Image 1 (cartoon, rainbow, N blue to C red):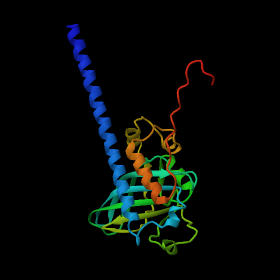
Image 2 (image 1 turned 120 degrees about the vertical axis):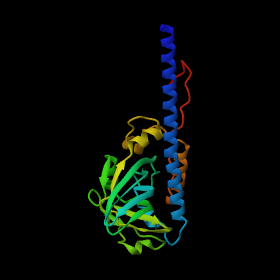
Image 3 (image 1 turned 45 degrees about the vertical axis):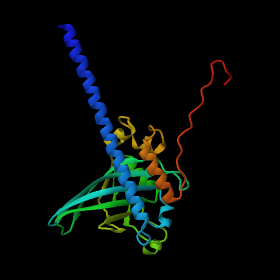
Image 4 (image 1 turned 90 degrees about the vertical axis):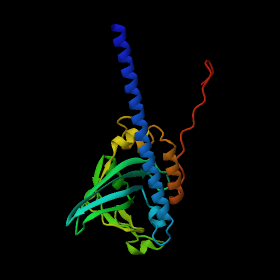
Length: 252
C-alpha cells in the first residue's frame, strides 16, 4: 500500500513538472511571437520613405517602445485601448540598445466611435528622465512625461520644434497610414509576467533587463536587437565572452 502510494505520488510530481515545463515553453513562445511582430512593425514603418520615423529623431532616442495591434473599443463616446509590446533603452545616444522589456499599454479615449479598431503604436523617448519613469513599473504619458504627436518622413523635423522639446513622441499606424498620434493619459506598465517567462527568471526586474544583469534573452531577442541597431544606426550589444577555465595550480 505504501509503495503504491509512493509510486502514485512520484507520478503526480513528474506530471506536474512536465505541465509546468510545457506552460513555460508556451509562455516563452508567446513572447517571442510578440517580438517577431514588433520587428515586422519596425521594418514596415521604416520601409515607407514618406511616413517613416525621422532619422534625426531616432538619433536622439534614449528609448523606443513598439506595441503592435493595440485594440481600441468604443461605444458612442466612451472607449478604451489595450495592447502589449516591447521597450528598449540605452544610457547614451552612442551606446547599444538594452535587451527588450515587455510592456502593457492601456488608455481611454473620448470621442464618437463605435466598434473595434486596431493600431500599431510606436513611442520614441528623447530624454533619460522619460525612461526612468517606466523603469519604476508604471507611467502615464502626459502626466509623468510630456508627450506629443511625432513628425514623420524625411523632413519630419519641420513638423515640430527642431529642439524636440517633448520627452516622448508618439505614433500610430492604422489601415496602412503611419502618423503622429495624441496619447495623453495613456498608461505604460512593465509586464512582469511576460518578462519572467521570456528570461526564465521569476521576479526579474526592468532595471535588471536594461542594465544587462538579467539572463540572456532567447535568439528572438537578439534578432530583434540586430534589426533595431540597423534602423537606428547603432552598435549591437554583445554577450559577455565566456571565460576560459584556469587549470588547478596555475598562476592567476
